[in-house]
Image (cartoon, rainbow, N blue to C red; front, side, top):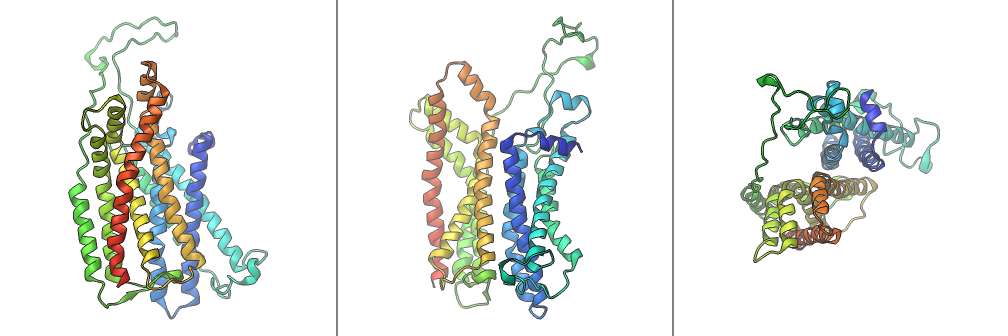
Length: 410
């Protein structure tokens, strides 16, 4: 009940992000139910149904990643004195955030079930003249336990991932430090209380924040990237073909595994590359503007780097398939839906991570404004950070896409 009340009173932009999570969950749930419909209509072809289920893993992972990013930007996960007074510490706030994430994804799963039943004709009215009824095995009874099991995958995965990502000590909500400042009397007249009488009541100041070290994933990312390209080149010889659902171009199993390693390498190396971009901004006699932009980019390297690496991986894979496919088939509606979900969720996750970075630096920006920093300087620093990231990651994505597409052209 408390999670519902906090969700209802959230900011409209946060509500919009939650609705986007629900929409992504609905799309992924519909793809899973379509896989169930294919399995019911083709009981003699379990391999094709298994491949369709494997294809749903990419939209599902993108949806869960987006849901976790939205949960991290929820102001309700931050400790406040009023909530701490009633026993809602960091652990319970993390649980509330997981429940809120589960509610958003459950709403999408319910919408997917309603659309699926409507297309099958189980609800009043049969859209599209019944064209989708045959594909969804409308002549067979729907196994409700199997459908509910598939629809519960995304909510369970999203709520679990949000709880793990926001748990105390892992970048989640942290309790506010007990600063050594004067405490007012219970009456609220501004008179300080008597000093603490015992050693256990002595206010403990917050420890100084040490500079964050550079991300250490660059060697592992380069190794995974090189291994993925090597696997793709080795697997480009004739071998067992992998046909994805909806008319995707055929590729070899080894090529698909190599591309997965390549994508993993981009995700692992992206935070370190973003940190290097921050150092590049501060090279050769930097001024105040470049120092501000570079230090901010170094601080946000982990927060922005991973979503940016995912976007680069999706962009390189899309470019490789579109440019060097064996044939150019007409993409089916389910493949188009899956591609839109993956691309949309990755871009929305990057935008949400940018919002999280802005929230994190709100106090710093306010302090700079109080010191007299012009607003144009802050906006220019943000544009400079974005420009450096685009100038570095765009050519990197293009090079990786060209190298990954070479085996597909043979």
